[in-house]
Structures are given as C-alpha cells and as structure tokens.
Amino acid sequence: MSKLRILLTGGGGMVGRNVLEHQAIHEFDVLAPPSSELNLLDFREVQAYLQANKPDMVIHAAGKVGGIQANMREPVGFLMDNLDMGRNIVWAAHQAGVKRLINLGSSCMYPRNHSEALTEDMVLKGELEPTNEGYALAKVVTARLCEYIVREDASYQYKTLIPCNLYGRYDKFDPAHSHLIPAIIHKVHQAKQSGQQTVEIWGDGTARREFMYAGDLADAMVRAITNFDTVPAYMNIGLGHDHTINDYYHAAAQVMGYTGGFVHDTSKPVGMARKLVSVERQHAWGWSPRHALHDGIEKTYGYYLKECQQ
Image 1 (cartoon, rainbow, N blue to C red):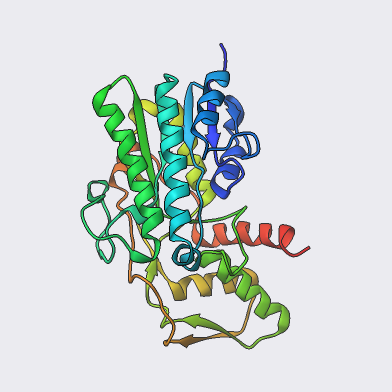
Image 2: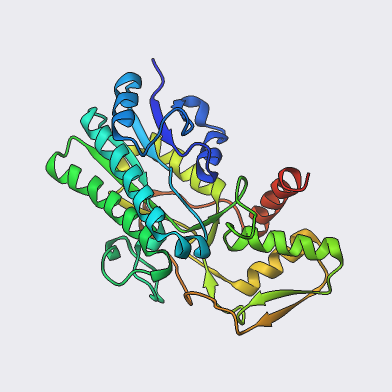
C-alpha cells in the first residue's frame, strides 16, 4: 500500500520543522519544498506544482510571521503575503481536486480583550487586536475560504486548526523578531553570562499568556492527518490554561540556573491582559499536549545553546 502523499507548506519554519522531525512522520510521503522550489506568492507556480506532484492532502503551515514591532512596522506585507499564500494554496488545491486540506490559523483571529476562553465560533465576533490586524485578517480570510469551499461542495474537506501562542526548537531568538518566550530565554541567558544582578520585565508582569511547545502542535497535526475525518471544521489547539509573564521569567531562570532578581518597568507597554483558547473541542477529539512549561523551556534552551551560541 502506497504512503499518503502530503504537501507541507512552511517546512522551513518553526512549526514545519517540528512536524518534519515528529517520530511518526516517516509513515507519510511528505513534500516540503523550500520557497526557492515553490513560491506560494505565485498562483500559477502553485497550480503547476500541485498538478505535477498530485498530493493526497495539503497542510498549509507557511506564513510571514513576526512579533508586535514587525507587525506594526509592515502591516501591508503581513496582510498581502499571508493573504496571497493562503488564497493561492487553498484555491490551487481545490482546482487540482485535492479533497483534504489542513489550514493553520492563529489565535489572533479572535476578538481582542476577551477575558474568557476563546471558542471557535467567536471568529469575526469582535474587533481584532490592532497591532497585528493585517496578519489576523489574512488568516481569517483563508479560514473562511476553506469553509466556503466545503459549503459549496462537501466532497472537499478543508479544516482549520487554530493554535495558541507557540515557542520551541527552531524558534527566532533575535530580539527584533522574537516572541515572548524566546525573548526571555535570550535575555536571561545574556544576564547570566554577563553576571547581571537583575533582569528587566516590561509592565508589572501580571498579564497572562498561553504558550504551547511547538512539538506538541506538531503532534496534534500528525494525529489530525491519521484521524482526519474526526477533525472539526475549526479546532483550537492549546493548553487551556495560561501563566503570567512573571511565571515565564521565573520558569526560564530556574531551567537556566539564573540566580539574579527581576525588576519591573511599568512605563513599558504590555499588550492584552489575556488571550486564552478554549480546548473543549480538542479534549472531545481526544488529544492534549505533553510538555509541561519547564520541559518545553529546557528543550528550547538546549536548542538555543546549540544553534544560537556558536
């Protein structure tokens, strides 16, 4: 029996690389072309690639991603690139007759400033966070396109997984591009190396964030391949609980052996007070993440020491 052939976009990114190193990925024939081989911004090129390689399933994990500063600095690029990539791969898959597709959304698709757990029916039910609105709009449109295709022809099953914030191996640690946990790891490591007595935390550290280890998302995605028919049209992938910013700093310090203290700069911006995804559908589907915070930070720090401190 031939292996299921899967086209994975974004194979060079953090999520894609975690999927490609998953222990069960060898059960499938995975195509993960770099952008030099498949330019997702060129619709005809995407069409030609799908016609030539005839995958059984597409997993769309590619995207232009970045932190708050990058999103605020380049809203046009974050909107246009993600919109074009999403539209091109989803529509080309449809045109090529690919019946199964998993689209990776983002929790920024949800309304801002909502203190309760965010459920999948809340997409487009409120104002988006302005700082990354362009990226969020592109993600919403791609998810809706998947939904509309299924609505017009149910023989196509195009589904969207919506992960919470992620961190892990293959993350970006450069402060200009990094998200919270890799930024903390870099900052605490620098403080430890230079013997700093304190590390500065922006704000009072009480804002809450949900960060899942990227290897766990990869595990959910591989399970979604083998149990595709049971995956809902939209499903959050997350922890279902969150931690304060202070918690993340203290956990990193503990893992990294930093014994200094922390000071708060309350004049600095902190962003939303909370963004937590509901995991009711995920639990009903029968999956939960494996990595506790300390385990995830330990693996991420190991990668950082090996790859970023040469």
